[in-house]
Image 1 (cartoon, helix red, strand yellow):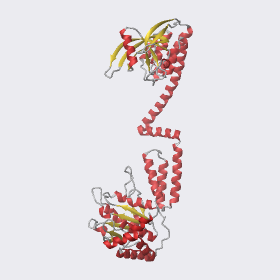
Image 2 (cartoon, rainbow, N blue to C red):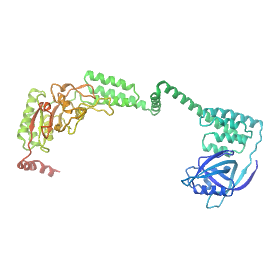
Image 3 (cartoon, one colour):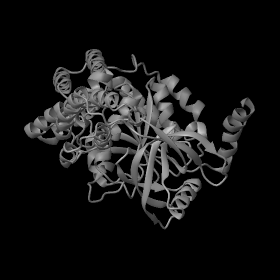
Image 4 (cartoon, rainbow, N blue to C red):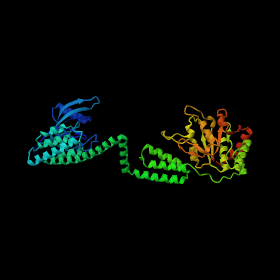
Length: 512
């Protein structure tokens, strides 16, 4: 194995190893590299190709370039519109950088040509045969390599050329290819190549088994089943299945503590059993989980405590919170007195009608405080869809219960004071008439079995005290108006405004 020295332009490569006898295109864009190519073509001389140790380094220094590379001929250069070059090179023989020659324009190196030993000993011949056998199997497994590669290497007798040609066809790490390039003894090179081939074969066999298993699964139950199997595998690795089991256990406890009516408890339990059989990350599981949580979170039996309405206390609260409105407060007090006597919420629904700012909403809050109940307010202004009241069916994406059930859940009790604000601003369109859905909500004879489309079970609203507010009456449908007792709240006189300022606004500002 001898060597001779020659001065050549250097072309540093990123993530590419060029072996002797290898012909391939390269894309060149760095200024120094372009100048090196132009020098090579101008003087009709070879060029030295060597890989960078770090492919991400845009300004490599001599220490960043491997010493061992390949002497190559430039066969063709094509200048591209973006200023880069496409160059076709052919590897000739190995070389080693002896020194860098000072050149500010491009890399220029003194290279020792490496002449390789082609002695074909029995051991080398046996090694070539072993490499050829494994390479044949490798090509059959790896679809990225053309089948002609085996035929192209079959008639090569020189050990070093045989090893280099096979290495050029293979797909593996740049570092491993560089080690092969630096291995000058053909026998040692063949040994390394055989080890790499066997390692790659094991990886390919595993890939083939995985692809085969996946293909069978896809044939058996199409693509959806395959995706579910992949999700299962990922969840098994990440421990998601254990988290899912924990969620199921928590939902069981929620259902147990919710104290639902028997038939509703059975429905929730049945839905939970369905959920256990689903894939945790599937859309169907999310829908089922959300539905069960809604059932469990609703206050089926939970009230605001024992209700003791004291008429004198109620009158005091109304007077504390509101100035004037004597007739309205008197009617509200009468309404509460009747409720205390009959111990049931029956009769017409109170509807407070008046211009904005006269205290309709705050009157509802005062009623809740007087009764010792929680107060919840829902604005109906601009509602056009019946589903806003009665809920969306679970078949729709993002379905939720209607505003009534949402309000009950937010209150956390089954007997709040529930204010339906701006009832006069509902409208009907092609999606239905929300006022028709409200008829069932406000009718004491029907609302004990209110059926929300999302829940698909009856919910008892008979313990809820509904209060409505409106600015005008003419836009409220007559059937709805028939179920309500209208209490008009007129605007305040100047004297009343002064009284409000003295009794409420000024003390509030002073306390702030």
